[in-house]
Length: 483
Ligand SMILES: Cc1cc2nc3c(=O)[nH]c(=O)nc-3n(C[C@H](O)[C@H](O)[C@H](O)COP(=O)(O)OP(=O)(O)OC[C@H]3O[C@@H](n4cnc5c(N)ncnc54)[C@H](O)[C@@H]3O)c2cc1C
Image 1 (cartoon, rainbow, N blue to C red):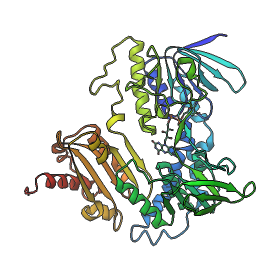
Image 2 (spheres, rainbow, N blue to C red):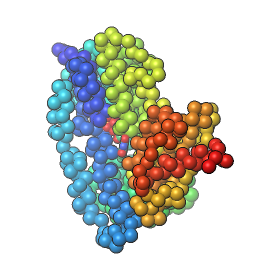
Image 3 (cartoon, rainbow, N blue to C red):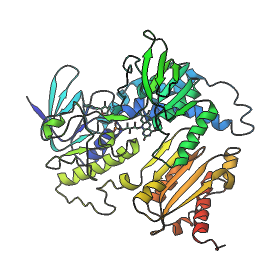
């Protein structure tokens, strides 16, 4: 069989794979990218993009209803068909020809089919036509195969044909009653979206909501969901599920004896790696595992520094922006090694994904919105940092917030490493907070000293003045007698 030879072979053309292609091409490396489904990946068609397209109208309405004068105008019901039409435009009707053309315009070869490792620097692609295309990478294979929905093995789960993030983002049918199982970001965003679109939503959570974040985040999100009418049940497990007939109602027996009856049930219970059929065994790795990497995104446990993994596939941070960051770094490393140049792994080197360890930003488009970057108080203390923690109630101390939304309700927390005088974590909850998070990301990732942040003056009257109040709260905490 003839092998096609490229400098780099990328498996998976989601946002992360495409970023790797673009950066490797910028370094003049020849690239083949293998995609078995849609170029653009989960993010473009069943993740970030359609979910935010569905959520935005819901949040705009909620925002309008918090402003006297606008509230009186925002009285009608949401136009579901218009919302679905907007979503369909953002996913290009699930047609990837635009993104495929974009990949080819980068100068890469797009090879449609299922890619598998086939030994060192080799990839075999099973094409839709039934052929196999053999690829040999001169320098690197980068796996950016993403993740899929993980559904727990509960009695009756397969028979009810549960929704996953895919149905939750591509459906144009609004179930009258929808149960969503899970307490993470996907679950709370989907509860917000589908409740806003008119479903009676029950959110079934085994432990808590957004438990990896500051405790006040989960409380605020649960409070917002309950106020809007979502039936949030925490601390409940599922004993079994059954559906009446092929498309009848779903009955969910909970372990506390309660029974929930709905038209559809969606599982948002985490993600699994898509590496069970990736040929990992041909290079000595366990099939079905997340691909563990070092900070240069080189897969550990494989000799020769030729195998890389970026994005969801490596499980470092399951977020598009963080995966794209890793892809940029991996491409730098691949290009340097291809030139036999030194790969400096110290300090702020462009060859190491340091931000994965201490400055990951994330936003949840719930009502209220949530934004966080860096460490929570608990994580900082567990890391042994001598920290001070300051909280503010945004609506009570920021005039601009009240002009933004009457009776603004929200909270911000800053965690400061006292030994260095730098913020190591910021969490914000409140309307419009998502667009503010990058200011915190710059402060945390840049390790900007508090003494310098005093000179970053937020405009009056914006919600950003919460920064002033956080700095004042920190100063007053540290120097109670200072004016
Ligand atoms: C509902 C939902 C909402 C989300 N919202 C956000 C958000 O707002 N912001 C955010 O940052 N993150 C969000 N995420 C997470 C985000 O979708 C992922 O972090 C992101 O998609 C990861 O990108 P990726 O390129 O690694 O993987 P993917 O986007 O999953 O792309 C991987 C690609 O690889 C292909 N592939 C897999 N195996 C093979 C193979 N063997 N051969 C060939 N091709 C293969 C797949 O078909 C796919 O196209 C959301 C996720 C969900 C589920």
